[in-house]
Image 1 (cartoon, helix red, strand yellow):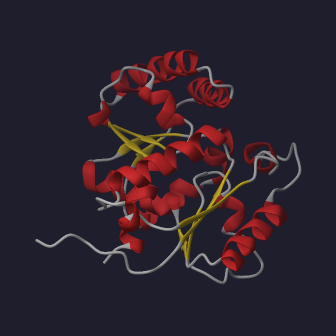
Image 2: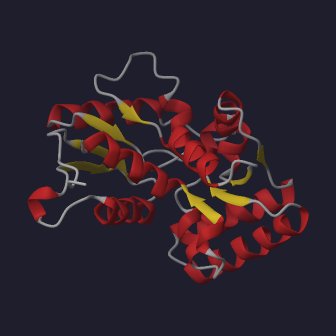
Length: 234
């Protein structure tokens, strides 16, 4: 079978939520691209806007909304020449989905990409690890229901530990993040041994540091990168 070819579309990535997750997304995108030379890799425009207000805090009613700044950045990516948009942050899609004005270019939606990847790998269902804001927003629950896919959430104490692991990744304390993820996941597997869906872009980094088996997780970063490859190559 012949190798897939670039279709000429340029990718616009809004990153900075957080910085390590954005860098890991670009690494995975490069690894998944069907390329053997520089010229066969996709053209990527990126804005790493670490000044965007915290998404979970906003959803929980404890901080300012990031919506206006996110919309401005996405429009800037389109002005730079992006034909396809991607945002390697799950929680911010709560605000993207509620934009009053439509985006001028299509968005590869990280939540749908992750749910579909998990459904393909584990049709019987998956655990969802996420920020507190994503869990409360219902983003994944609504998408999973639309695809008739069962997902399961940790209890409140476990959710808090996962939130803590996300903050450890943001602070570049990967060992501590991995310990928290491992503790929660092993508890979840005692209850129901299912695939773990890392529904926050910091959690794949914590999962990588946990020593848990890679084949028992689906990364939202990996799912988004794979969906972007599908959008950029024919």
